[in-house]
Length: 369
Image (cartoon, rainbow, N blue to C red; front, top):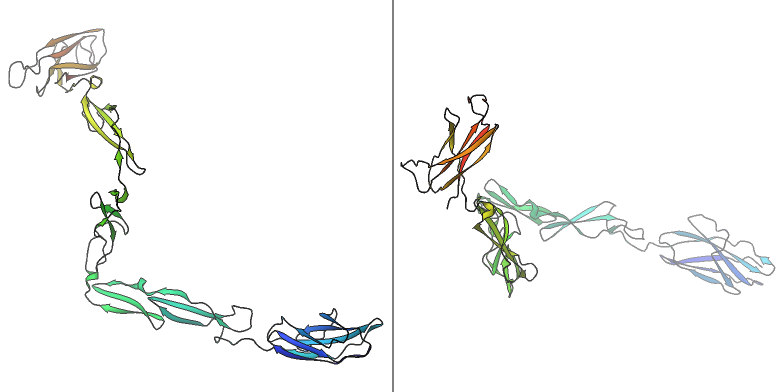
């Protein structure tokens, strides 16, 4: 077939209409395309149409881009020569919103400075502004310098401040509580929180707030009112435990409280117990030796003691016990401190004690009421 002549028209930033004259003997047309100023379209074709069709709309193109088009007619006998090349440039589909990439802009939003930046953020070739985002919190600069208070706020896209000389917020104060958000109970049904609720810079307790209906305050938290069951039986903890005397047994009992979150209640008591000495009080005595190797023990105080026993380490061949009344400081034989136990050790001589071998001896009072 004969060679067609081609022309094109840029309809929009993404569409070019291509047209050609209808030649004799053709059975259809093949359209070829290239991009770039002065380019030459080559195989393969980008589109093919049937006989007697003389136009094609090329869509989905890039804005502000030059495209070249050529057409061949074809039939069963072959193809025509290349047509001429027609060039069209798609127009820009946008307008720059800002001057250059990296340009910044600022505005105020409450006490925040917000920023946006110029750049290429979409598929078109134009510059756009980014979305606004928080850039600086002016309130973060609030504070004292000496007795003067600086109150920062945003104005005209930047942080500025108002100065309050000798402000009460800068007067020395003491925190009433440990940290903001701490809680404590005012009473069984109310609580209060820790925070900065006045003009100074210190933490203080809030007013008392009521717990929701049906709840009580425990350890600074509102929780469902607890209902406690029966006490368990008393159980032994140990001699001298829980603050009890060494000759007393500490006993404990518990009871479980509901609902979940309620504490398990417990209480203790001190009772006399034979396993702890049966009410025995031990007192050390001042001990010495007489010349015939008898150990002499005397008490500093006679108060409340009725019997004396000895825990005794020694070396020797034999020993025996003797008992006799203790003299109270007030004179005579006391009814409450009636007897002392004497260990007599007859053994080979040892260092410092002629004729007597006592390695360590001490006397203690027992049986006190």
